[in-house]
Image (cartoon, rainbow, N blue to C red; front, side, top):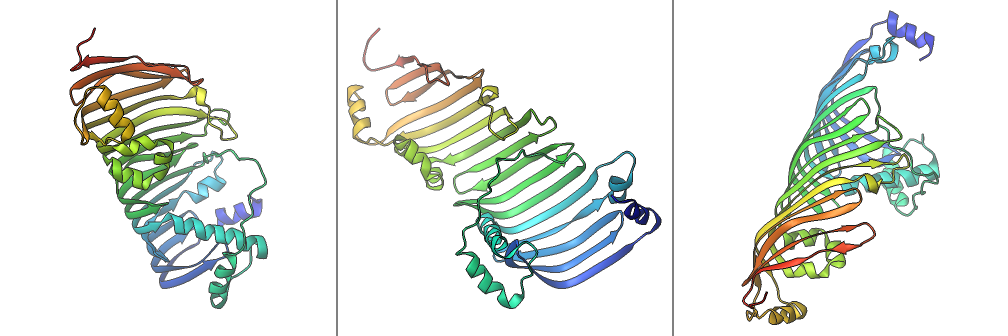
Length: 360
C-alpha cells in the first residue's frame, strides 16, 4: 500500500454500524435484480461483522452472517498475517444453472457496454433481454493456473435445503468449505439426491505451483440405478447394456492426482481405490442376454437375479487392477480378477465356481 494510506490506517480509527430493511442491487456483471433484506453489520478499519443479511435473486434465497477480521495486520504488519474470514450460510434454494446463466449475460453486456456501466432499474429488463441475444466472448488466453491465496484463512459453513445443478437436485446439503495457506478443502459434505445419498471430502493444494494436487474421498449409497440413469443419460449412451441392470448399489472412490500448471491432469500420478457393492440386483433379458442365458442352460424367461456383488479396483503406476471377487447369478457363481494398463492391454480370467453344467 501507499505510505499515505498506511499512515491513515495507523493514525485514524473508523467504526460504524449499518442497518437497512431492504436494498435493491443490479450490477452489469450480474444483470438481475438482487434484494438484500434485514441487513445489519458493524465495521472498522480492522474488521467487518455481518450480523445478518437475507439475499434474494429470482428463485435463489439465502441468509448469511459472519466476520472478516485482521484487516489492519494483513495490510500493515511487518510479518503479514492472513485475513481471517468466518461465515455461515443458510440456503433455502440455490439454482446454479440460473446463476451461471446470469453471469454469462453479464459477460455479454460487458463486452458491449464496458465494465463500469451503471444499469438503471427502468432499463434492467430490456438489457437482460438484449444480453440474451449477444454471444459471450470466449477467453482468448490459455488456461490459467488455479492458485489459492496464502494470505487468506477462510471457513464457510453451509446448510442448503435445495440445490439445482444441470438436472440434478441436491437436498439437505451440509458442509464446511475452508481456504488456508494455499489449499482449498470441502469437508464432510453430505447430501441427498434423486437417486441416492452422497458424501464428499476434497482437498486442492496449490502450495507448490509446479506440483498442484487434488485429493478426494467420494461416496454414494442406496443408489437406485434407474434413477441414476435418468440424472446421467450420457452413461446410457456410453454403456447401453447398463439399462438392463436394476436395483440399488453403493460406491466409494478415494484417491489423489497431481495437476500440471496448465491445469491438465497428470494421469500417471493417479492413485485411487474404487469399491462398488450391490445386492438383490436384477438383469433384464434383452435378446443378447437371453441368447447367452440359453447357452448357460438358464431357462428362466423373466429378469435374472444377481444375488450379491462386491468389487474393488485400484489404480497405481498406470495400471488398473481388479481384485478377486465373486458374484452369483441364478444357478451360477463366478469369480473374476485381472488388470489392464492405459494402453488397454487386458488380462481378466473368469472362473466358474458353481454351475449346473458339469465340467473341469
